[in-house]
Length: 99
Image 1: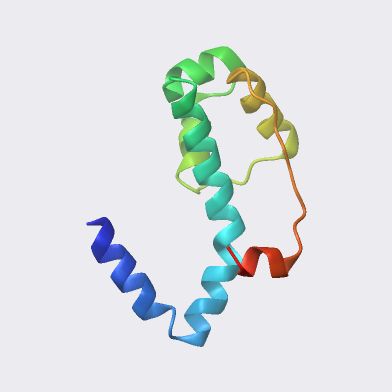
Image 2: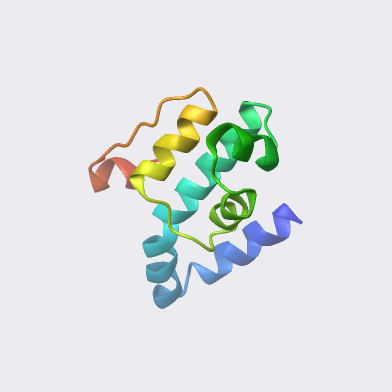
């Protein structure tokens, strides 16, 4: 299934309008994936993370599904609940394009 998605994405990326929209949303996708990866690396379920942070499990689910926009304060609370430090970077666009 992942291969099918990759093939479809490569095909769609040939469309300049699609590529522009995809690139505009990529930072959100990256944050969502980073939250999910960090929670799993911490061996926590959404429910366990909710208990540790006081953040409603439904709200964590919404964040991970891309249905909510987290504040910096909320991201810091999540990081603390996972015994992690939040790191935010500004990277030159040229550096991103070469990855």
